[in-house]
Length: 225
Image 1 (tube, helix red, strand yellow):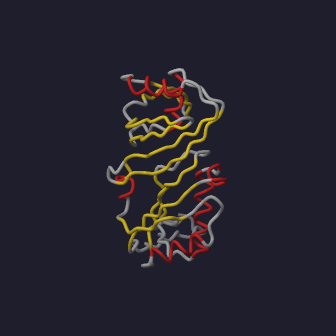
Image 2: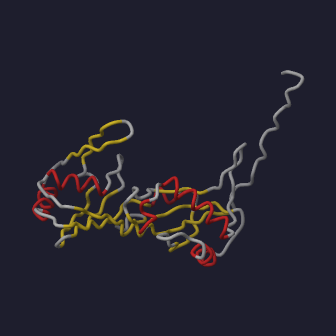
Image 3: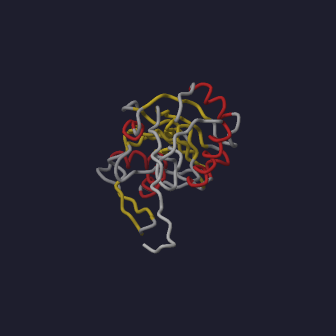
């Protein structure tokens, strides 16, 4: 080591969180069109403004202990998003919700705050219920019947690594058509089947529409959907 090179001290070891909170929130309106990265940065600012006692990681670049799970795709609305917060100090969940909703952005409403274990949310969120609202659909009911009866229905999705073929049937628990709407329950499988993948599958069974909107209505904890 050169004489003029200073020895870099090891980073300070930060204490582990005193607890974890599972926080539920909505993502609607303008917030539905924000990317996950933009929302994550906005959340960090909201948590600081609300005075949330966040724990931080150790290392040379500490970051707040915030974990996001199964985030709805950009452009899709959701009434049931979840994240986990690692806390540096105990706090009252109801007071935390009130403080967060006082500084939140349009389309994000914090709905629940429940003590949990680290990473428990990822294991417990097993399925989602989605609402698809169509404009001028044709053949929707017949396509849904055909999709449910088919042993497999594969679709092709564009990804950052190229085209990916996915069978939607293993994830499709229920599908119900009501006039211009469809409600579906999708298991959180690997690979993850999106609600938009089911719409593509409906198109392969001859359904069509001029426009659609997707909203996640709920996520099931421990098999509740």
